[in-house]
Length: 236
Image 1 (tube, rainbow, N blue to C red):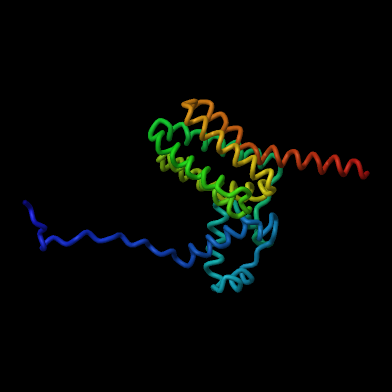
Image 2 (image 1 turned 180 degrees about the vertical axis):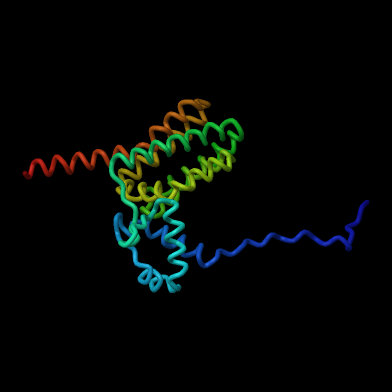
């Protein structure tokens, strides 16, 4: 029988690297934009945000540069920094790219680790269904877990990094366009249908359902725009 060798030290636990101040500020400003507390087209002030976050202006300036690469803010020379806006065509472009990335990720995940993919997505949907009417912030976190989870299940580093570059805008758009109890219920039902289709072994159908699901924000935006246009026409 072998006995432990006291001369061999026990393996050490890896320590999580704490976030730098700059990373914390980037996260906070990103979440302010995603949640709508900083609205579309709103001009951002380095000094005001620095005071609100209790930091100097330097990490706020660094955050603006990072968020500009994610297209969450727009830096306009001689004018300032503004929260991103989008029109119908720009939203369509984002949804088209999202469809390519998410359906591609699902196909890869199905081929590499199908059981893990189905199990993870099922857990997220079950958590969202546990609350009859989840509040907006709670559901948005679960919605994000569903979509980012399926992308990460692909285990394709390049694809995951490409998705990260649009993730902030995708989350912001979902937050703005999936707000009412009915919209949340429709989104949650779409997630469940995708999972059940995968469970039934209809993988191609599941990919198609996902492709249609990611276009929902665009369709909602288009319908709202048409309704506003018809209202204005009726008042003219």
